[in-house]
Length: 110
Image (cartoon, rainbow, N blue to C red; front, side, top):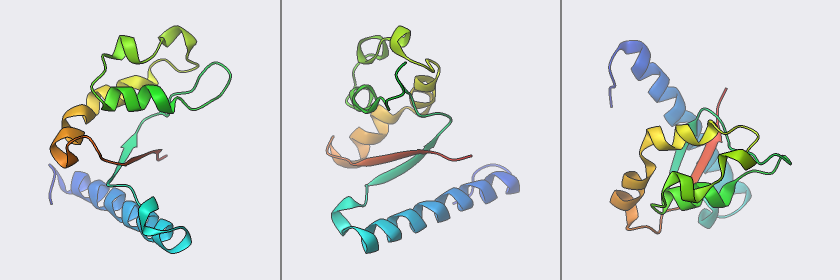
């Protein structure tokens, strides 16, 4: 698959290759059921003020919950982290992929 410029397609291929390596490692070290249906790269992982990952609010966003109902930005250490998920339009991606029963692995890649 090509996206835009040659540089853009190289970046896409690198991310795709990392995803394949992660899936292979999970399959080998854990079990095939641990391999998510999708792997996505985001700018930041959202954290609470006490340093916990905000997995439930991210899941709520994926399930179609309004952003202001999914999480209180006042309780976040990095409130702009949710913006990455909103830009990706993950809700539509999840619905198209597997009627809402999709496992998604989200990682910050630097």
